[in-house]
Image (cartoon, rainbow, N blue to C red; front, side, top):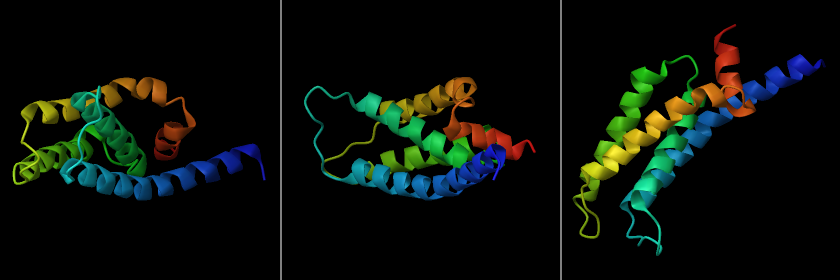
Length: 133
């Protein structure tokens, strides 16, 4: 098997795996957002939100390569973020925070800003390679 075909097969495997990883990440983020977990000393809640939504953006972008990032992907993640905040308002140990949602949105923007660099990595190169053929 040629190197090109082997790489193409690995890229297709990554794209299929990304859907499962995205689903798992949504479950993990939901659990961590609603569970009564205290923040470790010295951790910054807004940075955690930014990192989580950067990761979710990466996974949703890889999982659904034929969809525009600014279409349903951003709308879905932004809606997910605000729904998590609303859900937190119903738990006595959590609070609704627009600042947290803002950090989520910054994570999405940061991911988009990093796409020129990420397009060169194996993880995301397949997202553009397979959709441009």
